[in-house]
Length: 442
Image 1: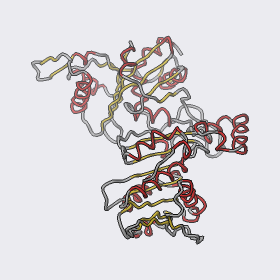
Image 2: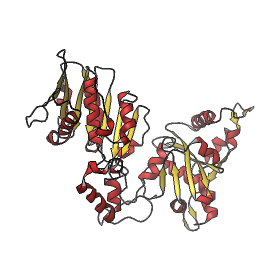
Image 3: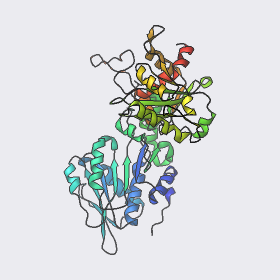
Image 4: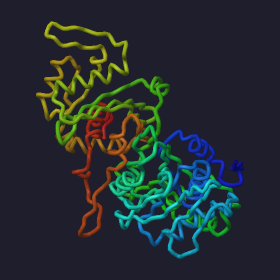
């Protein structure tokens, strides 16, 4: 029986994650954050404990290239074994070949393995076998070194033959907001817990004066680098069109306090989607709240209307129902005014027929300028655009990933707003808010 005094092993910032892992509340644990946040130390402790506590478990630890294993994750696992006082229980190879496993042998002779491998030879990962049990634990260190497909193939190859799995991922978020790791971390997964920590969560005497000096120097001289490297923020490349985005949960309680709601539709079928977005605007705070969305691919107008009705019925189950002689069924929430792209008058007419209160948002020029430019300029002028990334993942991606383009020849930032980047949710927002920013002027 192992007694764990967590206060001596890891920061209290990891207590909740430790309880969750030991109880196997989730299958996947993604550790993000800044440098010196002790992510790898915490994960290594959890892996060693899981091996000792579960005789069927083996662990596979992956880096992109094999030659980085020995001086990183291998030494990290050895550190965890030593700090847990288990060095006499594990056989640790002294060879310089990091791929040799660390083994744990039980009193009944059963041997478990912690195996280290580089993904530079995927066939070797497929061929890795253990004598007893199965690979229940997979740790991918420096996740940003991999592609999304790489990691999917590794999981398929490694995690088989058992019923309980622990997937650990650790990395410092890249500065580019559109990097796939940053985008993937915003994707909601009920079977995953994301743990974000920084050096501020770690007792200063654990870090040492040298690293603290580097942190303070970076903070004073380069704020963007400090926030990315040490706070683990995806600070962007400095090319973001919208610098006023706040991604966070917008609770039902908060929504109930909002007064003025707006709805927009950007027409589409395939590959461009049909996009409906709901938002609320507080003029006194100059804040726009994007609170719901519906994205549909390959839906005709009637199918899209039915899907939107179904979604809103889930939100308003007590909505008043109306049966019409022409066979259509409508609800009182369909009386809310929706602004839609005027480029498809037939789609607007179809939705009128189905019972929606839908109006065209005029495009083209407004006060001598393109309406898209006027709309974006107004959105940029707001104090905040608050987006709930769980309710509105597409809107969150579009607003945060929308960046000015660079002239490949000169390296200069091109004038005007970028084209060719996904903007369907943003278009729906512009249509919905057109009356507001037109009356507000430029």
